[in-house]
Length: 468
Image 1: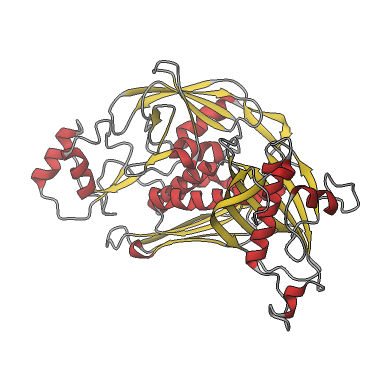
Image 2 (image 1 turned 135 degrees about the vertical axis):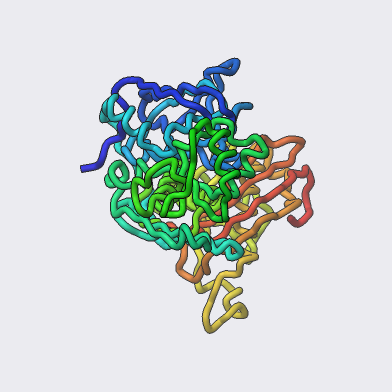
């Protein structure tokens, strides 16, 4: 039985301070309809602009993840998104009355608790996962960052951090299924090194911080005067270094709490892919910038695979829009250079053509006769002729026009085409035809395989007797 999408039962609010702005912020989680996804709404701005939680909207990863859309931004979204993913909530509208989510205690647990208080409601639509089918790799050799997503019928995470610090050392954290998030990961707080904290304070970049929402790793010698100065900045009587090598402001909730928090960040950042994932994510030394780059790579693969699913499967016995004779009435090409056998579908903005590749074609006498392969340049020619039908279909007397191609860009050949294959070409206008000039994107497929793709520019010319 397919899992259903779900949202929260009732709206629920949390209030706190933005870590970097120091501003008081109230954030309200609201139920949302099916297929809504995660959206933030800046209720403090004119028009209450909405910002989709989408990796394409990320504008900053320097001190957390910031997303921007419609002239508005929201910062430090990763802890909120991690809570939603960890609770398997699909649809929610998040109202926020400031430029940053509240830092709360530096983890996701207070967001989790608020939504647990609200409760959840199953919706009618099925939850559509993206299943990792092949390993997806991402790396940054200079930072020794390595990430891989592997096939698995669950959502599993393994994370390793290593900052070459004698205090922090090398730490690992993992969950075998996303349902473990609430217990094992949600309460893990953010951390920073003492030298980073001092830099942030010096540049006035941590106005909302107190020493109750971050683990501060002491990576340098600290004299009593420095500790007194920190105590005054954070309105505390005294601060000291605990035996674990962290400031004694808080006690660790887990021995490997920093690694668990990095895993939390990764779950939140990967939520920006926009669809729940089935797979095993392994990461070494992740950070927001790497997480976002990895999410973009995954999203690009999803988009590409989904675009393939939009292509129809055509019945070769169905009556075509144009058969070979009708095509010859429109195109000037003849044997052996007529490359389109049928037009299967035609509208004002798209065309679908068919080319049967057979061993009887003369070209195979000279093109790899021992291992016949249909040449890539002729695949492009067949695509061009298919696109030519689309352009000629826009004029009343197409037999009096020629289609002259002006430009072919971004041509890629993905897989070989051999005798016996049936090539299906899909050409779509990228924008309306202006002054007889058309811009198209073409894709050639054999079965479910994309074998060729290119962007084409053509012009129709009212003239006879020329060769296209």
